[in-house]
Image (tube, rainbow, N blue to C red; front, side, top):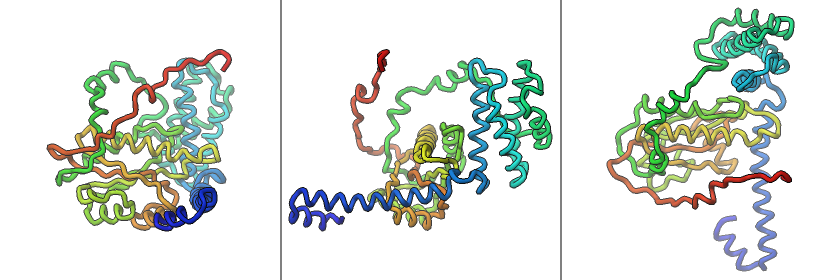
Length: 345
């Protein structure tokens, strides 16, 4: 309902009748919007088929091989754990290589499998204890060595303490939504720094399919912001703009229907902190839009249909001094609840 029509209806109809009419209108919009999301999720997610695309198969493989990484990172891994997942990984990896070749992703999976075999052999399990050992040896030899770390690694508390020694609460308290920027552009190295920070965001079962579609040309930024519609009064200040997305192919079944927005939100926040760590300001721009506007953005910014648009992030170098909204936070006791569950719970 338009605001004018809604006012007329509210003034002319009895209260219960107006609420009934409003429920029908809002309910119809919800059904249409949920239907739009449902159709895209059903079509592109891995719910029906894991091998409909490279991305779908990568997601399924990642979920399976990461279960082996998690098992080996436990305080006391049980020798012989993960017989079912390791069989799935071998089967899916063979399918992946047959379709897409022995690329770096395949070699990463192979490296995890090789560490899994070494772990079990070091624990005294004979090759015959897990039927996949021989197949894994042959497969990993064919794949070759990965150029990045995979499996598990050792980290010391000292390393973490050294890296965080100069990070205090003020780092977080001084992150504000900024709507006033200098004209100095953000360079490629600074964007790469922030993107590396975003890559470290947690994701369900390590399914890292967050993406940053970044625009730095004025005409491109203006075109995207016109569709978003929430930057009036400061759009000309923004010198860089990112559309944050997550790929629906990374998920499956009804239980993961909202996971793209969880993973995407963590990914976006890590990107924002990556900018903030370099003294670059940012403004979060929401993407709670109708199906029509969502389609319009995909067309304007060339975003594929299998990507869920999570939000937009405008950014730029800080002025020497600028104003921000105070945006007071809710009291701490409304946020932090230290709880104990009774034995009867």
